[in-house]
Length: 523
Ligand code: ADP
Image (cartoon, rainbow, N blue to C red; front, side):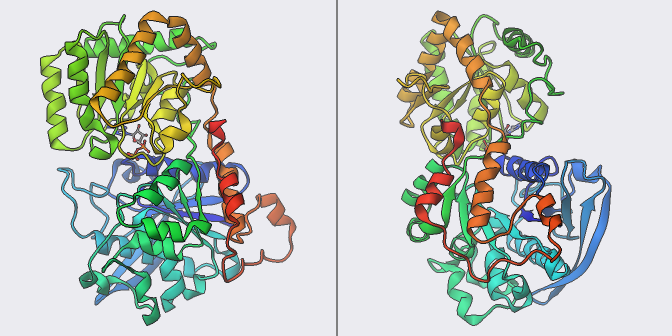
C-alpha cells in the first residue's frame, strides 16, 4: 500500500528544471528504502526520459473542466527503476509538449490554469478508484501547481470521500504562487459556496494561499526560509504568521546515490581510495583544458537559473572588478535564464577569454563535472529556500561561497565561526562590495593557506546531507497530523486494514514543531 503520495509538476529524472525535481525524485526513494512505500505522480510531458520508458496504464478516467470533457490515463513506470513507484498522468492536449512550463523558446505555455487544475483533478479521480483502506495515508503536495488539492478534497463534493486523508503542502518557492483571476474560476470543479473565500487572497485566486489555509501541515525547505517568508512572501506574510502552528522548516536532503563522487558516471575522475587531492586535481584539469583556464589558479563556478532570485546579475560587475584589480582566479558559469545577464556573461567570455567562460545551457552532466572540478561554488542568491547546489558542491569537495540567506544560512556556517563549525565563506549584503570581499577571502585562502583548503575539503565531503536524516523529520510531521505512517513490516502484522486518520487534523504543538524541524546538518 502506498503510504505517502507525492504530487508534483517535477520529479527527477523524468522532468526537472530545479530543486523541486531533485526533492520529489529522492524523498520517495528514501521512504521506500526505509520500508514505507512512497510514490510520486507527475504529468506526462513529452520529454526524453519519459518517452524512453515503458509505461503501464493503471487507470483510465474522465474529468470535466467547465464545459469540456477530458479523458486521461494514469500510468506507472514499468519495473520501478527509480526504487519506488512513479506514476504519470497522461492528459493529451495539455501536457504532451516538449517543455515543463515553457516551450523550447522559453515562452510560457499560457494555459497554466487549465493544465494545473486538470492534473490535480485527474490525480484525485484516480485516488477515488482505490478501495478506501488502500488509499495513501498522506497526500503530499509540492508548490503551487498542486496547491489546490488540500482545498479540493475538503470542499469539492466530487472528492470529499478523500477528505480524511491528511494533506501536507511544501513550499519550495514562495515567489511563484500560481495566482489567477476570478474570470478563470469556472475551470475549478464545483465546490461548496461557503469555501469560496478560501480561494481568494487580495481579490484573486491564489493557490498557494489556499494551500496554506487548508492543508493539514505546511512545510518549507529550510527553517530560515520559513522565518524569511514570515517577513516577506509577496503578500502572504500575515497568512503564514497566522497559520504558524502547522508550519515546519525541514532542510532538504540530497540523493547520495545520484551525487556520489565515488560512483558518479558523469565525471571524468571518480573518488578512489579516499584520494581527495587526486580526485579534485583531475576533475579540475579536465575543466581547465575544456575552458582554457590556468590550473594554478582557483576555479570559482556558478550553476543555476540565471534569474534575479539566484543573484546571478551581481556576478558580472563583481567579476569584472575582481579581474581588473588583478585577482588571480578563473570563473565559470553554467545556466540559462534572463537575457540581459546571459548577454553580459557572453560578453565577458569574449572580453576575458582564459579567465571567464559561460555555458548558457541546461546540462546535467556538465553540472556534475563542475561540482567535481571547481575549487569554489558561488551562490549570491537574493532568495534561497533551501539550495541544493551548495550541498552537491560540498559532497564533491568544492567550497561554497554563499550569501547568508534561507537554506544557505542553515547549511553553510562561515569558516570564521569560533566554534569551528565552518564549511564555507559567507557574505551578508547583496552588494558588489560584500561579494567581492567574499571572493577575496576565498582566493587569498587558496593561494596562501593550501593546508586549510585541504582540511576544509575533507571536512565538507564528510558531512552527511542524505535524506536518511531528513525523512525522520517528515515522518514526525506526518504523524503529528494523525497519519499512520509506519514501516511496512509493522503494517503487515496487523490483521485489520490500517485505520484511517481522524477527520480533523490535530494541531501540531509549536515548540515541538520547531525542535523536530531543526536541520541536523547544522550541528
Ligand atoms: P532552484 O531554485 O533552481 O530549484 P536548487 O538549488 O534547489 O535551485 O536546485 C537547482 C538544481 O538544478 C541543482 O540540481 C542544479 O545542479 C540544477 N541546475 C540548475 N541549473 C542548471 C543547469 N544550467 N544545468 C544543469 N543543472 C542545473
